[in-house]
Structures are given as structure tokens and as C-alpha cells.
Length: 360
Ligand code: PHB
Image 1: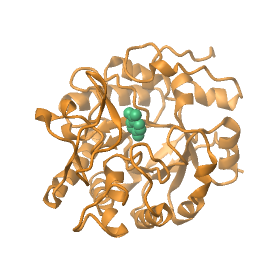
Image 2: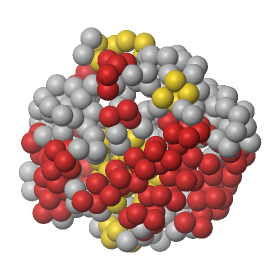
Image 3: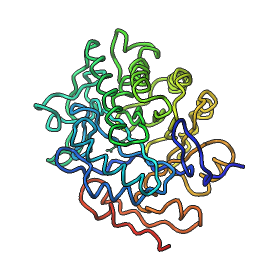
Image 4: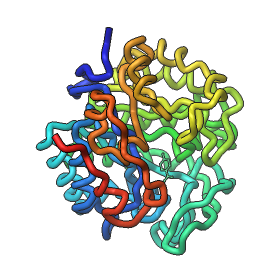
């Protein structure tokens, strides 16, 4: 029987266990949206994870949606991340970077020359974002022209290359949580005509072209992807999530990706019955790579799902924020630290690098 604590090879990356640190936005980037010394310490403390998925990082200046999130498009950002990956590797860990474009979930004050955010649509989202003026409603987006898509794909390709140059073991394409890729996928947002709107195949085209570009650049064995079929965060569900995400996974299968990471139910939510309205196992059966599940996992459920073959890996979010030595605590069945929920976004060391690990 497979254990949560067993090693696993995912694509080109060898992991010492199946416990993953989920990508977590912490808004602590320093000037230039660079991962600074505190961020180095934060990830170093958590390097006993089988895999760290470093927080969502914008692939270009236009891809940013919140204050003080790190990027992976400038030389300073690459150098900052290099300190992080060196620290994690020196501590025996593995780390990939989540590649992010927020699409319409942004504000003109965060974008170059006060530009409008870009999306599949020009309809504004019913959502807010965090800027230097605090929480504000997101700005009305501009729909990308079809002739701008190649440039967007090029931004993803270059960001993947930059991540490898920064020492990451790979990347995770963020295709979840109603950001840009999902703004193309879902018919609840995408109101385009032409090659990137209308049918499921057309709405999935951007995602698949981005995967093609990234895997050609860095190799499929260093590429994972995250999906959230039932998350409504900043947009309604698709009219037929099972058909849409079923098609996506069927098309992803031949790429030979390192892993597929699925959020069950509503992102950040508890494990609600609504999640059961979606057949995640159908996607699992269609995907040949490692299968990673996430959302509100307890120790028992993680152990049980890996033992039963329902997951190869389990990603933990809030538990990894509060408990840097989560792997040891789960292994020895020790209690976790309490989360300081008011210190998740922004600030300094408090609620970031000051959560204690247990003494050896
Ligand atoms: C957030 O900043 O609230 C956030 C970022 C990335 C996600 C989800 C939420 O995937």
C-alpha cells in the first residue's frame, strides 16, 4: 500500500514524499516585485515538503493583479528567486514556480501606464483587489485581440525559461481560480467569437497553446498544471464543467506532464457537498501523469486517499503556512500550529517566518 510519506518520481522531478506545499499568495515581495530575504527564509523553513509550489508569480507587468506579488519577468526577479531555490535545494527540497496571469482581476493602478487589465472579455468581474489604496473593485478590462495572443503565449514561454534560469525544478501553469486562462475556458466569462471563443475546443485553445509553448521550452517532465473546475472565486461556473474540464484533461494527456493539480470544490473553502457534484475521478482516469489533490485535507484523509490510489500527491495550503515542519507533524501525528489568519496578506516576518518548528 502506498504511503503519503513514500518518495515519488513526477516527470523529471524526484520527491522525497507526497506532501506538497500549495501555491500561496502572501504579498510580501520587495521593491520591483522581487522575492526578498524573508521569502528565502520562509521557503527554506518549509523545504521538507516533497514539493514546494512557490506562490503565483506574474509572467509580465500586465499579468499582475495584487500589490506586492512577485514576478518572474525581470533580471532582478530571477536573481531574487535564485536565492530562494538555492536555499530550498541546500535544505534537500524541490521547488517549482506557479506561472500567473490574472487577466481581468487587476486594477489600472497596478498596471504599466495605468493600462486597463486584459481578458477574454470586456465585461468587468464582480471582485475586488488589493492595491496601495487598500481593497478596491477591479477595473473594467479590455478584450485581447486575437493578434495579441501570440505575444501572450511568448510571455508564458519566457517566464518558464526564466523560472528554470532562476533554479526552479519546474513550473506549474496556473489555469485555476478564475484568472486569465479560466477567463478563456469558461463560457460564463468568455463571450468571444473567432478561434478563442465559442466551442469548448476554442475556449481551451489558449490553455493548450500555452502548454505547448512551455513544454517545448523546458520539457513536459518539468511542467505541471492546476485546475479548479468548481471554483467560483471571481466568476460563475461554466455551463458544463464536466464536459469542459474533461476535454481539457483529454487534450493534456498526450503531453506527458509531470503532474495535474486539482482543487476539489471551492478554493479555500471547506470540503463541502457541492464538490461531490463534479466527478474528479473521471478526470483522474483520463490523465497518465501524477495526480495531485488539494483543498481542506486532514492528515487522515490525505493518508487514506494516497493509500486508496485516489491521489499520488496531496497539497496543503493553510497547514503549511502555520506549520513549517508539517511533514514531520503529519508523520508523527503531532498537532499543528494555529494559523494567524489576519497575517496572510502583506506585512513582514510576523505570521510569515515566525511560526515555530518543533525541536528535533
Ligand atoms: C489571492 O491573491 O487571493 C489569490 C491568488 C492566487 C490564487 C487564489 C487567490 O490562485
